[in-house]
Length: 167
Image (cartoon, rainbow, N blue to C red):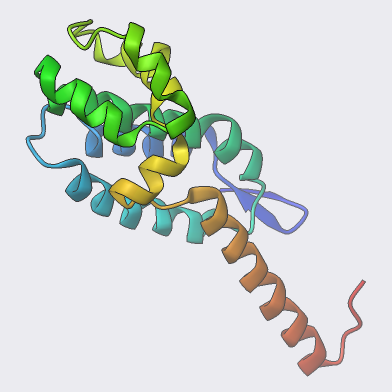
């Protein structure tokens, strides 16, 4: 753990372990539903955020982790849907209404290259909000913001109790 102005942030090794564990949880060959996967992932991410919330991880979460986790979920969905009919049906269900016209030119027979396809095509059709609402994935940025707010309130109450002035 590295301390920066009284705040801890994960070292490169710990961040690598976090990414390895997320990759393990979101593996395509686990044989579990995406909802089950998101429950397990939520518990792990929530614990990690709780530990490092006081540190400078906001940029790391927003720039790297959140998009990467959503892409991992999309690739698992594409793998689980398997057949073209199911892929087309689920995309119509999950797609935003204003983007449905794009599905006319889309071929559900495309690609078993799940990782490539999760960014090239599915990113346009399955937005972050849909993954959060439909599959119960934790809104990581909101969870971090809530934890930061809670920590701020605790610090303020401790300062008031001990008679320190904030600022």
